[in-house]
Length: 86
Image (cartoon, rainbow, N blue to C red; front, side):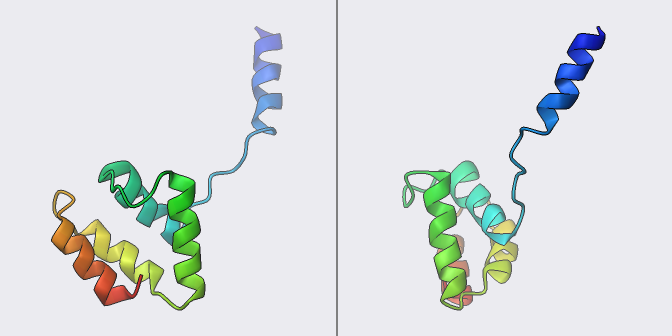
């Protein structure tokens, strides 16, 4: 038992921390929950989101707006995009 416990503890140091932030929240909704076809992967969504952030989009506002979207309603998602500039 001790060997498995030690291996578990050692394994924790090798994991990559999961980034949590507005782009992660946005892509969770767009890619994971709503399966928007705009992105081929979660990483592509994050990259696009980061670029939008660098260009001045209000990504935290966009993430907040997306959290209020009903059942992945495309029109509501587009309204959020228009309002927050991404």
